[in-house]
Length: 151
Length: 158
Image (cartoon, rainbow over all chains, first blue to last red; front, top):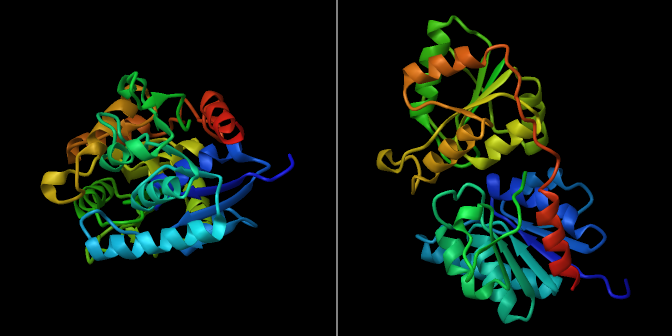
C-alpha cells in the first residue's frame, strides 16, 4: 500500500472496549491509534498507540464538553482516514467530529443492544457512513445494516 | 474457584448479596469477587481489588465458573475463556443501570445457550447446581465473525 490508512479506533470501557478488540483484525496492516478511557487498557494492546480521554455520559454537560475537546485534539493529532467505534460517548463524539473533518466513519452498535439500537447509536446515524447493528432483527433498509457480530 | 464480577463501572450490591448468601449456604470458601465501588462487606466472599485487564483475565482463567452482571465485557471475557457463566441482569428501576438493556442481553444469550441467567436468589442456586461440572457448550472464537471483518476491511480499504 502506498499511503498507510490511518485508523482511529474509539471505545469507552467494559464491553465497548472488548468488542472493539474483536473487530480489529479487520484493520490489520494499517496505522491504528486507539482512543479509550482507562490507561490500564493499554495492556490489552501492547505496542499500539493509545490516547486516553475522560469518559462522560450524556447527562453530564461539562463532561461532554471536555470529552469533545479531547476527541477533537485526538482527531487533529491522528488525522484519521477512518474512524471506527463500538460506543459509547467518546465514540459518538469521534464519529460526529471525525465526519465533520472528512474522515470515513463506521459505528458498530454494541451487541448488548438486543431490543433497540442504543441512544448514541441512533444519534450517530447521520454521521456514520457505515452504520451497523449486530442483530439482524434490528436491521432495516434505511439502516442500520447487519454484517455479522463480534463472536 | 468461582469468580464473581460486577463489571468495571458501578457497584451491584444486590447481586453480591445473593452470591454471598448462596456461598454461605453451600459452605463455599472459594468464591472471589470484584464488587466495584461499594461499601458492602460480604460475609463469605473474598473481595478482590481492582485489577488491570490482563490480571483480571488471568484470574478468570483459573476459575471453574463465573457469576457476573449481564454486561457484555464480563460475558465476552468468560466466553473467550470458555467458562460457564451465570448472569444477573441489572435493573433500572433499582437504580442499578440507566436502562434495562441487560435484561434483553441475558434473555437472548441464554436462549442461544451461551449463558445461564438468574432473576432470584433461588434461581441463582438452581443455576449454580446446573452448571457444576459442566463446561461451556459453545466456546467462541478469538475475533468477530468473518462477514463482519470483511465488511469493515472493505469499508476501510475502498
